Amino acid sequence: MQAKIAAGLSALVLTVLVACDNKPPANHSAAASAPQQASQFDAEGKAVVYQVFTRLFGNTQTTNKPWGTLEENGVGKFSDFTDDALQGIKALGTTHIWYTGVPHHAVIRDYTAYGISNDDPDVVKGRAGSPYAVKDYYSVNPDLADDPAKRLEEFQALIARTHQHGMKVLIDIVPNHVARRYESLAKPEGVRDFGADDDTSVEYARDNNFYYIPGSAFQVPAWPADYQVLGGDAHPLADGKFAEVPAKWTGNGARSVQPAFDDWYETVKINFGVRPDGSYDFDKLPADYAEKDWQAHYQFWQGKEVPDTWIKFRDIVLYWTAMGVDGFRYDMAEMVPVEFWSYLNSHIKQQNPDAFLLAEVYQPHLYRDYIKLGLMDYLYDKVEFYDSLKLVMQGKGPTSELVSIQQRMADIEHHMLHFLENHDEQRIAAPEFAGDARKGMPAMVVSTLISTSPTMLYFGQDVGEPGAADAGFGKASRTTIFDYWGVPHHQRWMNGGKFDGGALSPAERELRQFYEALMQFSRNAPALNGAYQELHTHNLAAGSVYSEQQLAFARYVERQQLVVVSHFNPQQAVEFTLQLPASLISAWQLADGTYQLQDQLSGQQNQLQVSNGLGQIPVQLAPLGSVVYQLVR
Image 1 (cartoon, rainbow, N blue to C red):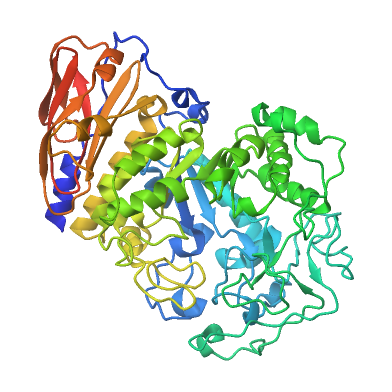
Image 2: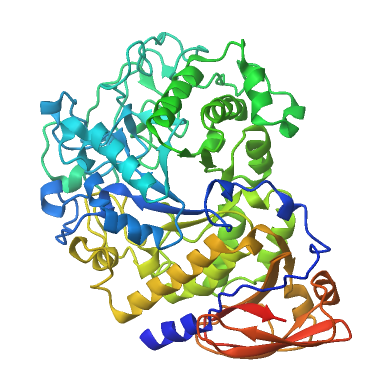
């Protein structure tokens, strides 16, 4: 494996095309002209989001007992993000750290000494709890603090350290649902808890925060035969009961007093002024606001009555923004009406115009509404780009589909954040996905370099973490988000708190070097904010061995131009002549002749031959290899 990774790494040519005398590209696309968010940073390339599951990141314990307690399996802390750790994160080109699981969520651990009520394991997933069952939006998870009494101060110190290292801070906001028992200890004076003033005698009222099933008591789900709460360990509250009268709708919208095990039974659905029949109980945003800026949206909502829930979430996000949080990742945003997002996001931008707002939306027909009307900066490009790229990595899909997606998304491609891993998806190295972290290498080159959108990395991805173990509630192939756990490959990079990769295997170290080189390049290359031209269709028709196992495209601006080719076959090398069409040669103002290509990592030389206005590059790619060429006139 070591030799194969080295071959793939040496084949990755991260280069800058120097063309100082060029005119602006003739076919500079509308997508390439999209407003850029990178101006707030020093570098000229794209934003890079590093998602870290906060309670797992710094944990050095290796017991990894399924359903293990915090004492048995350990837990990471805010203080584990030391200067060395943050330097290691920034080495991946990181501009924003998404600290996942920070808001105080339901957790099976006794913090009553700090005034925190105990949570009932019958309505908590795992022992450490789901980060998406928030219990107190004005506080942070006490597990993450060295001193739970000072948990908020410790998080504020982490915000400051992150900023000192030139990175920005994102946290989760989960408007669609909250924990089954929401109870804020830290709310500011005058703030009322969700549900505190609800009329529970009716299913729906505009200013209720929850939906109710009047006259009925909640019932714990019927557990599957292979499931036991806390893995069967005794707990005084694990009695198959949870007091909730009247019962509330469950987080995914289930309206039964007894949700199913597959429902989001640990949460309750939030009411945003959407009646049970789906109609809206608030002002509709005019369609022409899709073309208006956030200032116009902000003015639209001034003086209008809005549901109480809207005001509560506005106060929550502005509380965190004032504390120094630079943006938010919104969970399941599509389950909340777009008008609310216009209201919320315009209020955030009023306080911080540079706020980074990332949303989870999985229905492509809604993408433009949530970007243009909902004022989202970025959406996950999951259902289109990621899902298709996953099939390519598995040898089950053609690279042509990626070209088609880029064409379909041309008007919004800047807003479609790319990723290969996150907490919801299987690890690349998991047998259930690709079974080999190396298969992520060409995919990461394509995902990172094909568009102007930001790229997201998940912690442990850069060292090939496979998420291989059943942790309790969290099962193999995805690193658990429900359990106390140590992450083995990532722990080897941590190296006992040195965060220097000293315990990595040679193969893991070389994979990490690949990610550092690629992501730093993407962070600094201005061409990645420029024009895109696909070379795939032209080369498929050229009659060479170029096939659906390769993908080629060009990225360029006036002073920097790139040619990218990736090869997805994990076993066979490939050799062919890449054809550059006349349109690209013309855009680059290249006369007939021979141009030098240079691999800036290996120093190897290659050439581009231009004849009769057409270009040719001889390309040799190792299994899973990629090139990003430099042209020197």
